[in-house]
Image (cartoon, rainbow, N blue to C red; front, side):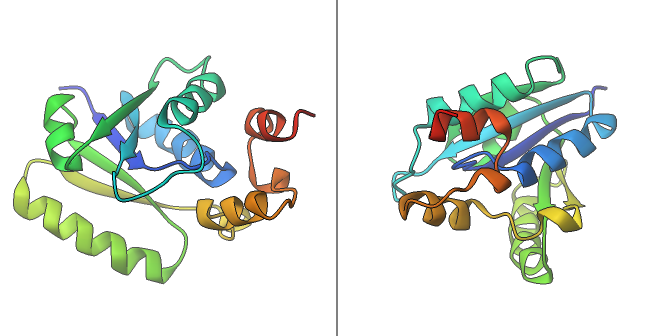
Amino acid sequence: MSRICLFPGTFDPVTLGHVDIIQRALPLFDKIYVGIGTNSAKKPMFSAEQRAKWVKEIFIDEPKVEAIIYEGLTIEYCKQIDASFILRGIRYVSDFEYEKTIADANRTLDRTIETVFLTGEPKYTSVASTIVRDIIANGGDASPFLPDLVAQYLYKK
């Protein structure tokens, strides 16, 4: 049985923290789907297609990583792609409390899909897409928080 995992999120934009979690998950899974979730209640800064393109370009040389766009319940999408695992990154204790609640709900919906938490590298704990979007929206330079490819796109460096 393959160890297939879904790493769901908005990735708006993809940050160094996201890349760190994906890279450290590579030895754990045979396939990692980076699932760019769409939510009609949220207005993202970047299109889902752009976010997927960034993931594809960042991991162009890593066949185990694939970017996909999905909507609906994460647990239902896991079933569609035969994922037995959901990957989540944790920066702070408050992240864990929130993520555990979601993991518990997902376990109630399907006991065969397990959530795996990876803690972020300390140097990336302050990297959050919300903060990065705020920096970008206010004309600041978010480059220290972004993969070079994303920063180049944003700032045409």
